Length: 535
RNA sequence: GGCCCGUUCGUCUAGGGGUUAGGACAGGAGAUUUUCAUUCUUCAAACAGGGGUUCGAUUCCCCUACGGGCUACCA
Image (cartoon, rainbow, N blue to C red):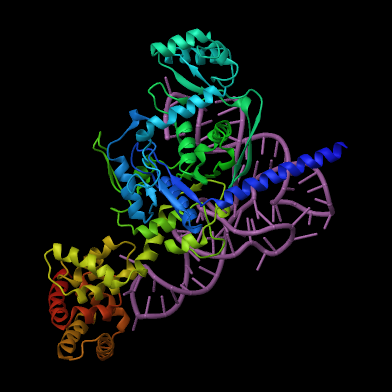
């Protein structure tokens, strides 16, 4: 009999779960990225936005940008625009949001201010929240007392609320009087004394928390604004969010959010949670911070940021010459992997391959060297014609006048040697102007024995040749070396220095052919004189 | 301190009860390009520790250690 009852109960629970799952499956996937505009967007934030975006697009869903500016004291001018611009640079687009609008506008919580109070009141009505009139001093005193009494974690909870000034302890007429008089108050969540709250996390599985460990969090502040907890639950509900993908730092407050959905009567459409592992500093431990970037010499922000108060400038990936696709590719693989050995992914490929199941649980240390490697891979992939467009502008700005086809050929030769496009000039200046200096030590080392004679002879041979292409140049060079009884390899580097001023670079005869006969023979002539003077 | 989360080469990670524990970045060595920063080959490098369960555990369970997050009328 008891077993039968148990079976029936089990069946009931099971069918409830099925109903819940079905309800979720009917809903179009909708995710949000919800930063607060308190400063520049950290690369960890970019990754959170990216994972949200990949997940949404993978499932044909919507991606929203919501600005969580419920703390007016932390408002930083320019931060919101910075966030929008950064994500645009990264190629992360939104279906709805502050900058693009949408059916659930406004998307800025400060503009939604009036919507929140009714939900807080609804909770008070239902007995799940209460008014509290305690001053900051009284709260501070309470914490001090508890600390003095050796209480493990001093908090406003089911025990301490008994000794505070709130609608649970004050006579109802006094509560009425205070509210009518406009006394400052907050609305606090009334956390039940002894319950177990289960958070189902898509990355971590079940997380169980005892309500006895939770405190009566403020839901509605005395300035008339909701706190994050209330606002994010209300907005996610109103905006029909199906999946909340956010940083691990939110995991401790997830049980509170679950309770909020339950008490507000929205548990059947509660979003599913996924708490992302943190991005860690490359050395030691701890969250990656702006300081680490300064200290170790890499940007932590997508774009350069100038602090509006201190004027301090923080470097950005964009300004440091990173290709956005490379930056995104690197970020995608910090905490997620496709389960294959593929490392280079376009955004489309990322969307295709992405799944929450393959996000790792542990924090990932950021690796600046690998980020450079990604950039190098992308630089090589970029067609020389594209590279030449921007490089041509740089050349022009330096006061030179060259054909774009010539510049494109230069790009073709040097792009394999560079990690960043901003290295192009230093790698290739000699294609555009006479080399201005030579490595004297190297010249001293190489400019001896039969070398000067060979070079003189080479100059004449080059002047006499009519076919100045790489293949013929190589043949001419080798023939001349043989004629002079000298190994071609042993004079190749000094020849390179003579015409380019540099000891290393792209294929020597390609470069010679590209620069052209007149310039090369002139440079050679000049170099011979200078080398003779150096030695 | 309390609560929660985590722990495979230096780093990002794959894997999963029996594997030579795989890949990538970085590092070492060699080759080739008679330069080289490319490319190729190659080397070194890891399951935090202790207990279980098991014929067998790096994999499952527990404990410890270590690391991290949270602990505001901040998000």
